[in-house]
Image (cartoon, rainbow, N blue to C red; front, side, top):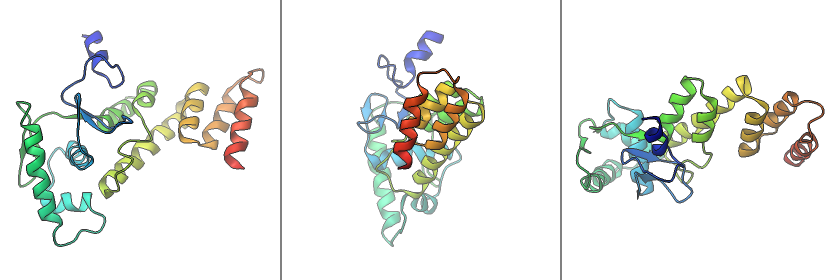
Amino acid sequence: MAAETQLLLPGAGVVADPDYLDLGRPDGAHLGSCPVSLRHAEILALLAQHRDGLSSAQLVDELFERPDAAAEGTVRAEMVRLRKVLASSPGRSLTSRPYRLQWELQTTIGRLWSALESGDIENALRLYSPGMLERSQAPGILALRYRAEAAPRELVMDRGSAQQLLNLGRQLADSNLLRAALRELPASSPARSLIVAEIQGLEA
């Protein structure tokens, strides 16, 4: 079971979990092995975070920074298209009023929260990607993305090893994390001069 679970994790590259929405791939979001559009990825990610569902008006607020009179109609049209995409796999359905997932969809963000809540720093860092839905400007996604960056940073600053601080500091180009890594490294570490140079480059 442990081996099977490992194969389902993002990045394993062997088995794609059909009920996993991978938001961290450089080639865009994928549901299982299938690419999904940015808008559908936004909707699925938001509904996965709101298991009780979202009304049409709530979904408009989550998706549009400045919704106009046509926004609710646009959302309804997207939901029709999304249902057609999901219909290719049995068991995947969406309710209306409110819009709600009728199956257990896992997402990169959901797995990241679980790792953070359990204090599993290594798994959280493996799941975290600063590029999650990076093209999205939907308010709900921007909020999720901010939390997905802030929470791992705080956990690593509080409890991370020198290597974890260094890895995340480089990923985020964050000089404070790199300084924290320096404090954790022994004075004799050959990596210190390189990290100092990286900090100077970031703060120049």
